[in-house]
Length: 348
Ligand code: IPM
Ligand code: MN
Image 1 (tube, rainbow, N blue to C red):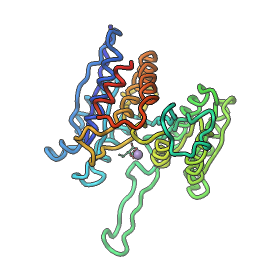
Image 2 (cartoon, rainbow, N blue to C red):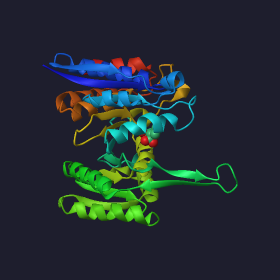
Image 3 (cartoon, rainbow, N blue to C red):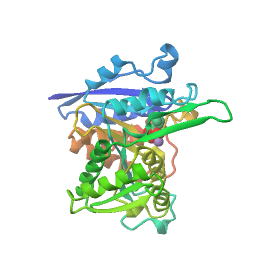
Image 4 (tube, helix red, strand yellow):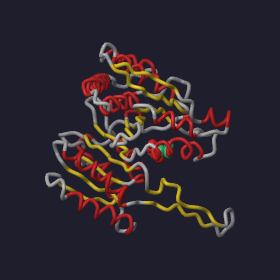
């Protein structure tokens, strides 16, 4: 018998609603396995900020460090100035906990309708994973504004790419490609314009490639990659890219495999020096918050990734199979958030 200490951050908008369903599935799948998930809820996001002015107090960050994993719903709310919660809660978690591998699978499950024309979906289907760098790039907040509010305002947002940061995520992506049947890695960047960062990424991929002779590599500029993602996503196996390009292309990727309601993600600290964090790719969707309309599937699939990360591969595949079984018969029926959670839990 062992205990897994799980920190739960419901967050804003639909976050708590989808997280409740993720926990329902987690409880059901781990019942009678000898593993107990001990959950501790953390109140972070808009409510806390309005009440106390706090985003992520140091003491909370330190407590989170003591957990085995974190399950997060969504952070961000229109009642809080843009950026305050994103820069104050979500990004500091990813950065401080060294979650440099932001893993975002894109898989078209049977029964799910892709907006792609039917003849565009490769016979082998769509099954790729984006390894998005999670701690650097334009996300670091290295910038500023001069002459703010004047006609001569200058705003900079410097993308920071370190050899250390690029190399560790590139090596992780190669290892993932190596473990997959197709063993193919695509670097997505924009080295024809972002010549400094682009060349660092390209050189790093070329060098790390020597450690993985079985992995074939390709390169695409991010603009061209969006065309292929929308017309021939079956060609991709593993994509490695920087933080901002990864943010953008994983929304496109989600759209072509059935929508953002199904897109799961993991913010992984591969060295396990701090907990990894699992969250749906979608945001807090304030327009539908509190109405039980949100699809909890992305969170449930993220719980599957959490189980996988913790080495509970059996439970992880049971979760994925239950989701796949539900998706296969889902059709266009309208169900509430808990109804979807119940249906998936009953298929475990
Ligand atoms: C995501 C989100 C976040 C990001 C925002 C909320 C900061 O869009 O997880 O994709 O840009 O990483
Ligand atoms: Mn995003």
